[in-house]
Image 1 (cartoon, rainbow, N blue to C red):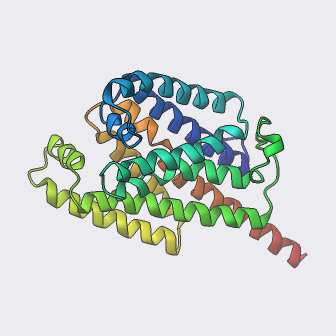
Image 2 (cartoon, rainbow, N blue to C red; image 1 turned 30 degrees about the vertical axis):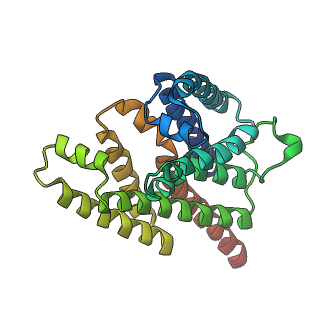
Length: 264
């Protein structure tokens, strides 16, 4: 990405994030992840039928992700925006903490930001590819920055909340890493993530965002089962943090150009 413009880097970051969400999520459908039965049950679907449907839904998700990589038509991120909200909501609807929903803000935040930066939803052009070279108007860029700030706030705060309430899966992660007091580790990590979330919402600093990006990428590697698919599925989280980093750079570039014109 060294020869790409900041605008193109922003585009490809969000595009890859959308593809990762689809591919990672779809892989669990192929694997037939058992906890998905709880989400099918929200619609009154039993385990037998749920296991039969999982590979079909998973295969469709993966296909959408692959299409996004080679031909980024607007329909793909629009569908993930809807699908990401629905699947994230199924967690609290099935009895899990509401934090599980907001922690997955990257799943629907990445496609939302991509659509905003590419001119919004054009129903006549849903099958046309998003052009990474189209110049982003200053007002649209500012709205995208605000969107990404809120999304990053939610995903960091949501994960921090899950640490504070000592989510069983997180406790298992810390125990497997050799910590003797996993609850203390969870509380410290949760406090850090919530503080990070607030800092992003109030005043995101590019150098600090890189720290949060590395933190998120690293901590999502701690999942003991199907670690590769878990990490890929959370591409929206890393993508939104990195996209905010690029978007702030793009905004600074635009402000500098405007100042140079005024000085001239």
